Length: 194
Image (tube, rainbow, N blue to C red; front, side, top):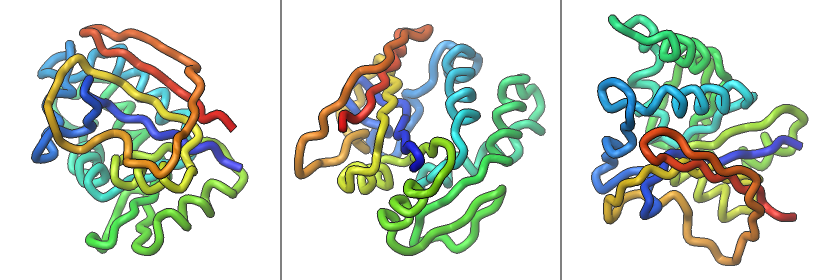
């Protein structure tokens, strides 16, 4: 059975995007308000350790509008070039009923997301990561997420898309890692207690 990991950048008040899907707050100490090199490298290693990435529509649209050609942009840093290449090659599944085409080693699922995630999780293989708060919220409510990785940025936005979905019952977690990155960004990683 595969492990399912939900991890995203989050504001201190718990949002993955501010009102209007604004993620401008997630910049950091790097050039052009990009995350610090250390944090960017950490996310790269997380993706590299995953065998399959699951995306909701909004996150897919954000990622696919940038990463397919990021390594060909003037001034692309070596880390961005590596990430772009890894992202294109990484097997991905996009869950959406409103788009009809995906590229870059990606499969589209238009039907029952929870059933498909449960099927993929039941297969043999390495870890899967899930991104996009709406998609992850459905998996969260179904009890499918094994690990939560919260990369908290020191900013309050007051509203938007919450990291955690409303749940019908408690989910007990165990803290497995904490780490501080430049700019006051704090990583906390939790595993679901069984």
